[in-house]
Length: 80
Image 1 (cartoon, rainbow, N blue to C red):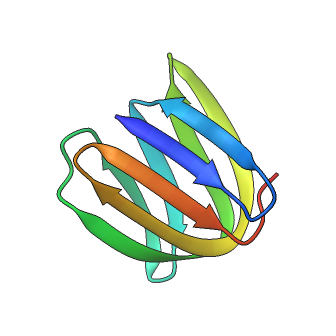
Image 2: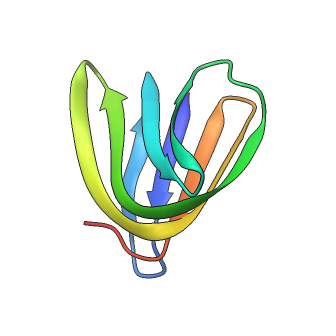
């Protein structure tokens, strides 16, 4: 599945991933390939992306996540 993590200033991650785990406003959640469409508010916390058998960690400052047709986009206020 394709995952992108974007901030107003830059693209933090853009690539194929096996999974993404995010700090949802109502609790953390993980998305795998084939997940049903989803729109979720995010709180500040850690985002984890598993890509090519490696874990990538990002500190995000809240935002939104949209997932449909095996493509997910994190629109984050900030990310490191």
